Length: 226
Image (cartoon, rainbow, N blue to C red):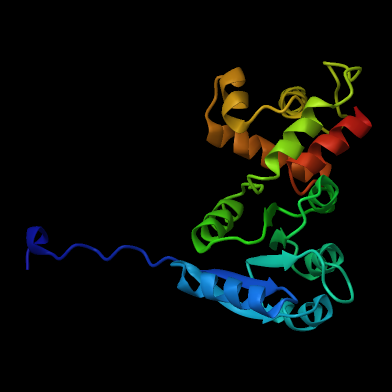
């Protein structure tokens, strides 16, 4: 068989995202499990009723991402997330809740949650949030983004425009000032004349230097030391 008649190479096999669920409500837990099972590219590796059960049984399953309810019997979802990260530092966490209070949103993000969505949540939305979170994004429920934007608008006006953080380079400080002003990746890229991919890499380096888990936490840490 000559080269021109060789069959086309098979596409590379996608490795499924390993998803775990921590949710005490039976109906919600089953809905999430079905949504994960029915979504291409996702694999449900376990579902747990309490944070204590998750801490005992989840780490050996090596999940890539956890759908975590905030309100759990016993330890809270936020505390469970923080303890899980000690043994699974690269674990992505999507906080799932009925709460639409900005207090829960900010507490979750500042504690290190990657994303925040509200129930009920349909299968397509859940799959999209998981994909964006695994790609390094921080999706927030559409009904909560108004709270987040209002918090950015209400940042103290006395904050100096040329604030700097000692751990960051001059360019990284500039990026953080834009981030604190509420600019999105596309806008920051336009300000620098670079691609959005470059901005994502810059933010990854900044988050690592600041020990921040997300944009809100990074802005808070930047402003505290600036």
